[in-house]
Image (cartoon, rainbow, N blue to C red; front, side, top):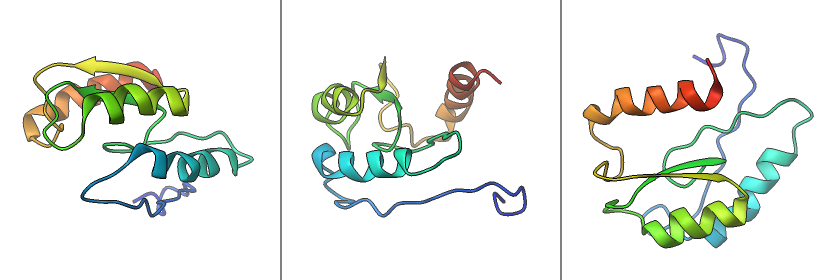
Length: 106
């Protein structure tokens, strides 16, 4: 779909799919966000983002390591939620869309 819209994009290979470590990802994410001469909008699920939307009850990723620590390492804004788990269920879709609209101002 992005190709049809003429949007440049990159999907980096981030290590540790099952047991991600924020330190392993920081260098890759920094490289991706600083290598473009165009404005960058980084959209990611889970650990890959400049604004981190993290639920304290996430059953996959530790809130402290992958929310608090990663947001500081990436100098990203951290928005903390309760009761959203890993944002995997369809009931979270409207919440995520509203969050993106608010953060991206569209």
